[in-house]
Length: 424
Image 1 (cartoon, rainbow, N blue to C red):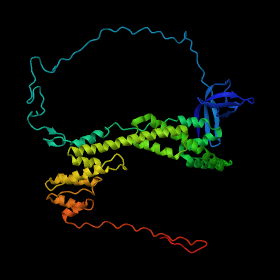
Image 2: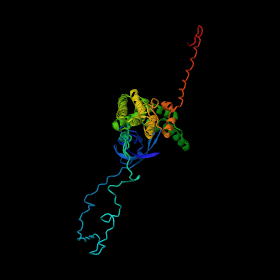
Image 3: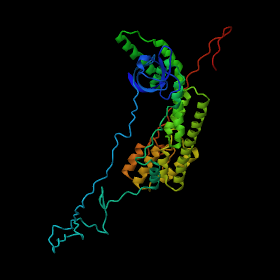
Image 4: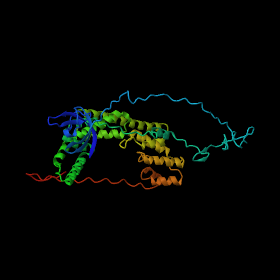
């Protein structure tokens, strides 16, 4: 497929052909026949060219002649500004309010609010109408733990975006390659080895249709295998540089992906330094999130908000984050003391739901169950996750599952010069 780009003529060979490079590039990229260059072409001219890229190189199909700069004589085509003509004073018309009424007449005042407003007047001491709840509807009051969670959620409309990745290292890597390696490297940047195979198949299919010989697939694949580490390293450097420039605004998932990808490429000295910096930034952010999570649980327990502490413990900053043993004991003890028979049924059910989602559900020992059918039914269903509920209801506690037997040890083969030995 052909495309248009700007090229610069760099030198002219004795046979009349020209060498060219992309506008702004450092090294020449190929040659072009003299019959394609417009008459009067000089070294350093930047022209518009139509090129075709293939696995064997880049070929210039046509070159457009450069645009001629037109010198405009200032004495000709000069426009003289005479100014805007003067206008006669216009007529201003002002309409008086209530011009339809006759002089001396007054419009009858409507009943209701002064000024003719017929909207129903709201009683200052009466209940206020809500939008969705009808008369007397009020907004629900959020609890302290819910307000803290809502504060940490990002505001609607302020969505974090991925950092823009520049192509500085990739362009530098492409500039060091030979012209015949550039098409293979470009395919590697697009989709790796599968993209190179697909491009070879497409080019061979087009060659067979045109009656031309096929390209050497083995040589091109060997070249792709040789260029793959260089291309992967350049791509990772661009991603890592963008992550480093983004700082704390980058999402934790994106930062972790860049750090993980550093273990799949062959790093040089510059890349090792960059990878260590990103790893330190990742560890710092993960540690800060874990400390903040534990502090929220501790503050909720200290202030007596056991339900909020259980809900926070069910949402760790990472799936691999574990609650410390001392904090888990305090959390289970607080939940056990809060789940008594004197607690209202709805609060007890909320505590049970939070316990089932928390990491301490196996160690919570409720003090009692309210005399409510819904609470008893929920406790009966949750007895498998909270074993202490089975004792309160009177259900038999099933024994723990048996351990998987260890595989038998295989006997050793007999020695060469003596008898056989068996494992003890």
